[in-house]
Length: 106
Length: 116
Image 1: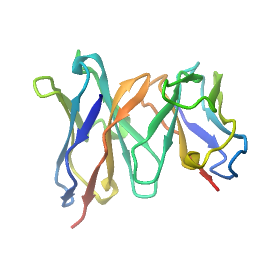
Image 2: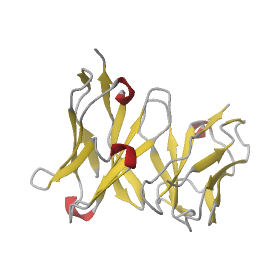
Image 3: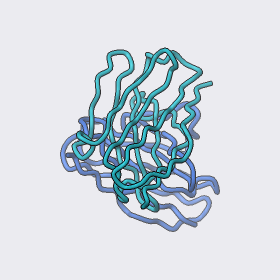
Image 4: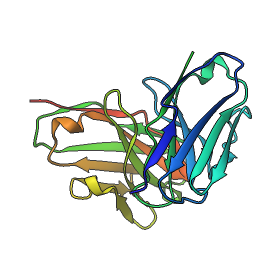
């Protein structure tokens, strides 16, 4: 199985901050990398697919980059509604493993 | 609009089976497959498997290969996840997700509690 490792596991930040979350794959996944946001008690929400493609309804302050084994999710200016847990997931090969999550806190 | 509505919470005894449904609406059912993902209390997301609606092809994570069966019913636009041999470790919220590059629409989740 491909292992996905996110860092940091948790992050304290303030409204307006620029935040970067990193995801590393144990082997190359080209750009088959998705980013999700999950709020407590809710289903995950897909933000970015194919490493850098933003879903149409997702605010442009979110961006993704990377290829091969190293990827980043950046939030350019944190808003109150962005405090949540973020997960990366590889869809290069089955099983489509998730990272362990990054909890973004105030 | 696309909606995935899952069946209600379940309480099962160890060794039992459970079947969770995911009723889809608002799009052409055969155009997308489904992934199933679970989340144990306070834990992260765990991908269980995928089923293609058009061709019925399935993929399972190794730990679920002999424990889970994914099916779909095109006549009712419903996807199903059946899990056998339940243990307390299977206590979790189970989600279905329409698969398009990633899971672009998700059900609300179904809590399955396994307790004697």
